[in-house]
Structures are given as C-alpha cells and as structure tokens.
Image 1 (cartoon, rainbow, N blue to C red):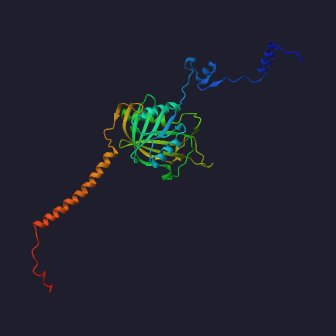
Image 2 (image 1 turned 30 degrees about the vertical axis):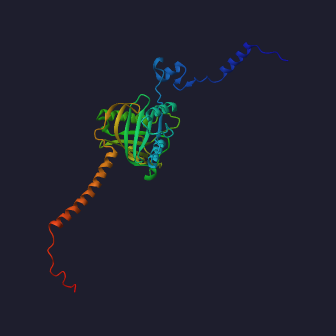
Image 3 (image 1 turned 90 degrees about the vertical axis):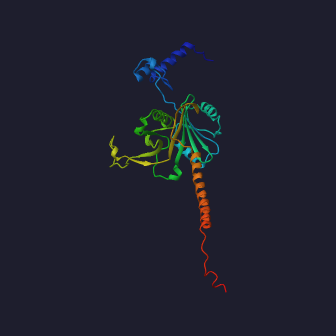
Length: 318
C-alpha cells in the first residue's frame, strides 16, 4: 500500500491551486457584499452605513366570503397587475376580521393588505392597510369595470413595473397626502423583485374628481418600425392605450391602526348605500301615496259636484 500524505502537504497543494485560477469573487448576501471593502467601493461611504435600503414590500390580497362574481373578477385583475402580491383564502366578514387578517398577514410574511369586503351581495368595500401598526383606510368601491367586460385593445407584459402618476390635488390636504403615500407603497412594484420584469410599459393613473379617487391603467405604446425608431426622450411619438380595469374609490375613514383604532379622518360627504336605497324606496312609496290621494280627491269631487239628471236618458228604452 502507498504511504498516506501528511496534512501539511495537502494544504500546500490546495493553496497553489487557488493562486493559479482567477481571484475568488466576494460572497453576496441579500443586504449586499460581505467584504467591507467591497461595500465601501459600492456605496462610497463609511462601513456604518453599509446596509443599503432594499424595498421588500409584499401585499396580501384577499376577499370576504359570499363575494359577487364581478367583484371577484376585479380582485383577480388587481392580483394580475401586482407581481409582488400574495393571494390568500377568503376571510369571514365579521367584527373580529382585523385580528384574523393581521395574523394571516404575519404568517404570509407581508407588510400590506388589500381586503375586498362585500356586503349584501351588492356593496363592495376596499380595506387598504399597512400591517401590523397601521394606518388603514376604508373605501367604498363604485363604477367597477373589469378587464373581461371592457375588452379594451391595450396590452402590456405581465409582471412589468408600472409608473404611478397622481393628479396635482393630492398635495392639497393632509389626508390626500397620506393616501398618496399608501398607494405608492402598495401599488408600486419593488425594484429587482423576483417575479417582476425590469420594464416600464404601463401607467397607473390616480386622479381625484369630486372627492373620489379614479383609477385607470394605460399601456405605453411606442412605434416598432426601424424607420420610426424613437429618440431617447421623444415623448411625442408615445401613445397611451387603456388596458383596464376601472374603478372609483370613495374614502370613508382613515384609522391610525391596522383595520381599526383611532379615527384620523372621516369623510363628511359620505352617504352609505343603505341610505341611498332607503331614499329611493321612499320616493317610490311617495308615488303610490300620490296615486291614492288623487283617487280619494276625485271621489270627493264627484260627491260634492253631482251631475244634473239628463231628461233624454230614458228616451230610447221603449
């Protein structure tokens, strides 16, 4: 049998092999390079500020039980637009739903939530919450049009990052500024997310009209012919084609906590759908009451003004 090599001889052989090849690449973690020298080269700062901010925003999207099919399709459209979201099972719409949702969000490792709550099979409410410390907003969703029913010509890559645009009146009041910041954090896809694509080929438009937030989604269309090749910064050849979906958000309340807590803002112009339906019923009931009153007035008029007897009424009876 051959002689065994000593441990020191094996170490020298390994060292010579390492020197022969290319230099070893520094190891990389989620927060950056492990070597402090590499971190200093990349950040250009002292080693204390080595942890570069990394957006790890994850949004959980879920809905309540007994949701309408149109509202379920709207939720699926929103899921398809947000590559950084996680869809979860339906949650019972009760008074204790806040604690249940906070626990689910923590289990799924998310930091935000979009909860579609359907009441009476016809009213849709959207909860937009930052978890677990808040704040949270409750919206009434109106003017819902899904991608399937609109059948628009716009189309964009699934998973591409959107540009978020806001109307100028978002800077008018404090509660609109808070809503703008929440929308940016929830609807903005994080950079270098594993499910996103590094392209900007569509725009999310949020505009305030009549104290309502209107949402639109447009594809950024550019010419593809070689002759019509667009110069960098040439916005005159770009066109916007609507993709969908469409919906309108009517803010009801802003809470300091997640799905509850102290009220930061309450909309003074909000009228619940139940009140609107009650007014419509009263108007219909008023029409019937008017008919009954008209009949009684006619009878009273006939009794107070009887017709004179006609002397020729029995003329042809013989």
